Structure formats: structure tokens, C-alpha cells
Length: 77
Image (cartoon, rainbow, N blue to C red; front, side, top):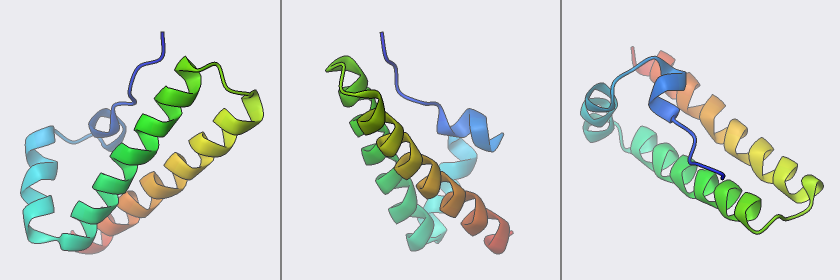
């Protein structure tokens, strides 16, 4: 059964740490919202048993957003 991806574990941060940074950084907040949406699309596609190609494209989109989040966290540190 497909499950949402744990962004906070990937970032090695707690949800509280990210929430604190989100309130101070509108771009980071926007990126995390985009990530959540992209992750939901991946889970939905996996549950619908979409083609491997479609799921792979959605996962690539999610990874691209995650990379932007990492860069934003590094630049704001």
C-alpha cells in the first residue's frame, strides 16, 4: 500500500524545526506546500496503479521540489 513520503526524515529535521523556518520564509513555505501536493499525486498514482512511466515522472517532480527545499534551507542557514 503506497504511503506518503516523510520529508522531515529526509531533511534530518523535526517537523517543529521546519514549521519554525516556514513561518519566517514564505518561499520555503510555498515549496513545502508544493512538495506535499506532489507527494499526494505520487501516492494517488501508485494507488491507481498508474503506468510506471507516469509514477516515475511524478516522483521526479517530487524530487525536484525536494531539492529546491534543501537549497532554500541551506541558503537561509
